[in-house]
Length: 127
Image 1: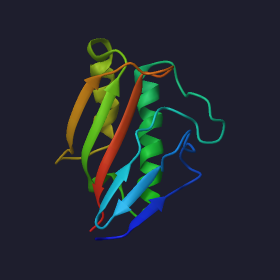
Image 2: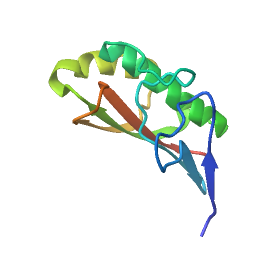
Image 3: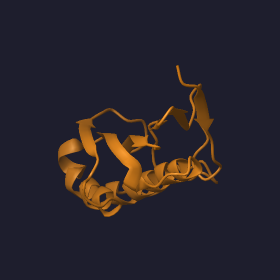
Image 4: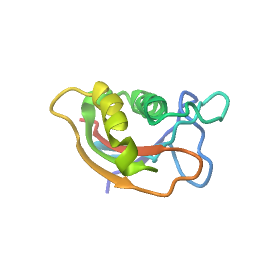
């Protein structure tokens, strides 16, 4: 069995509970589900889904960079939207701007989120 390595960076929000920002298990990196939290202030960034999606993506990018990876190594994302029907197009526009084809596979669901509009987690290939 391969060893697990925690990934931690001050450039992404500190965990608010018993979880890691990211874990590398062999050649796979998993991130926690992150919201639009400013890593310096701990406050929510933005009022629109576009603003919040941008911050979430920057937070996730910081975790991947700490692991020595870029967004081009992402193979799967899971997206939770507070208002799926209302916010999907705005979310998707910003999300898409962070990637190039081939895009990662993605699951997008409507969820009850506390005080935020979007949460995303990622799976990336390290090798």
